Length: 445
Image 1 (cartoon, rainbow, N blue to C red):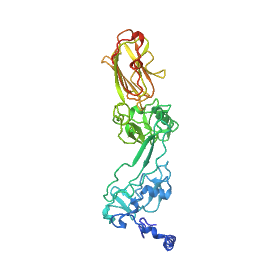
Image 2: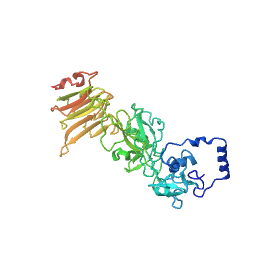
Image 3: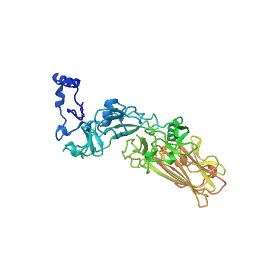
Image 4: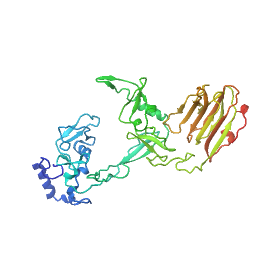
């Protein structure tokens, strides 16, 4: 059949079989549906079928739902003369061609469209009507991409009902709506989830030289990439320290680092190969953020600031001087005398900072990608001596945390601590700041 449904488009004509089927269609009274014309400006010939069915759609109609337009062209075959499609989604190196022209109105180059097998400019289309883009209906929401740790479910629509043409406007509004799902914590960290995806490619060869397969163990490259680049399945070779993409993209919901610091409570996660921001309500680009109490969209009235300083400690022993309760937010602890002391942090009877008798190096627990992460920073003097220790935790805490101090001797220790604590279910100061009886001094709140 011809590219616009008309007679003798390009060099194609009706076969006797097609002619007979069409005559039967009209004779049996089934043609009334063609009288239901869409509401549009201009005449019917100005609305080309290629505006509704792009080349990808035409490939799917011809070769099945997995087909898509070829990603490369053949200079010997004019763009509008032959339908060229990737039939196997895993094979982007071969094209299957169908010797039929693309539908009239199919975009074939910037500001050019197909007409009777030729790629032409608007002036050649004899189409005075400007066609503005219009959205298709929304697809169904996809299934959640992860079973825990915060996956993504999304739906899409396309600006193809019709596509903008002849100088018409693009569709206005988002083409994707998405939400976080299954946000309960996993047993493993967000970094572990990336490590698993990288390690799954260990058996896939890398061809650094033609016809020479090399195999490596792959680990996350989190410290070397950010933003959209981080979502492109970028992994680092363990021991070799070079970075390559090991796939098209990480699983939707994989955490990423945005190019700038996100608002409080926002989550940066990969979606279709791009690093996207989800508001504290879990909705893509909602802009909603947590208040200082960790409440999504709150006004900061559900918690109060607790501030204190502590001088004390026990020589060569770890002493708990502050117990942070569940839901504590905006935690900030500073040690001003790290020459003689150092801090440690304990959760569930296990240390996540120090605890070995030695001062810790800079670290983030569990990782920079995890929610409610704890950041420990050690600042040095120009002589490379410890000058200040600092703990930062945005919260809200999911479990109680103990901050401890260890002294080298009985030198004076000086600590400052502040955090936001929920008003409901408060504990008293003595329970929060549990000072060792033998070293208890003055605490000012």
